[in-house]
Amino acid sequence: REAILKAAEELFFTHAFKRVTFRLIAQKAGVSPALVVYYFKNKEQLFDQLIEEHTPRLAKEFSSFKSRSQVQLSEIIVKYVQFWQNHPNIPILLTRGGLSQDFESRKKLEESRFNHVTKQTLYSALKKVPGCNDMNIDYYYMLVSSLSTQPYLNIDNNEDCSKFNITDYTR
Image (tube, rainbow, N blue to C red; front, top):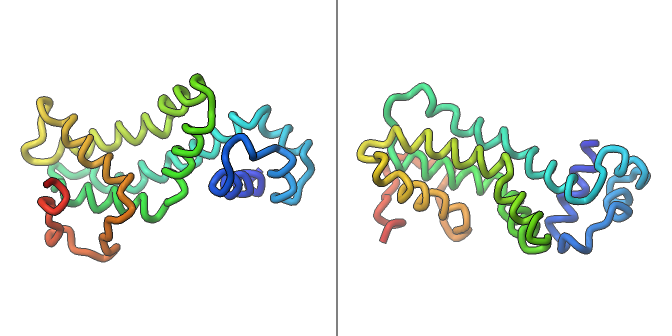
């Protein structure tokens, strides 16, 4: 199962959704196409599972904020950007999958557990930011979540959050 998921992720990363077939996935994974069908009834289910596999990773990254009463916005931004830098396949998979599937599949992808957990995780962390409240939390969420699509951001993994200048990214 893991070999199938790994092969599928590599193929979805490099090929359009419509071009990836169970036969191609099986060949790359070194298994029989029947084994792929045994685990996944269709390509959409396999793709959904790939996205779901990443869900706990994001929640784990932000778990350190749960026990704190206050979190700086810069800490959330650094953690979020580092997550996407450490897992660059996720936004590409989400983008390729969203562009390549029919309307219903795209809607399902938007409503996926991964997107739900991402939003819930960020909102929980943002509620601990001084100055963030019910009136402006959507703005903060939009600001932070938009950074996942900015591959040009270069935040050193060892950077001290106190030296992060939020104004560089909010102009």
